[in-house]
Image (cartoon, helix red, strand yellow):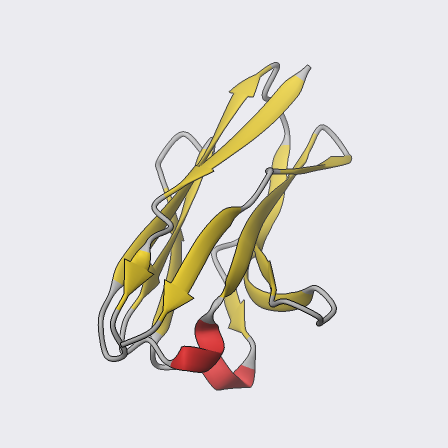
Length: 115
């Protein structure tokens, strides 16, 4: 059984920074793409960033040049460094990982950007 646990969400002022972490535990093998989605109140869940197995990173346009996705050397953790945060970045952020051909999701961590 694989579980993902996010951390790092917080209340931050516009222009501030946060680093989200997502750690996988359990039977971890054949780790594939991993990344982050977010869901704001009253809106659908949307793609934020993805890190492919070969190291290629993709971002939604609105976060390019502000967010950076990375992973640890073991492939069991993924991070999202968020800089220059804006009000519209407020959402619950969910991490996902493809492990052993299956997709796993975390429970989400709240990011609130407000003055």
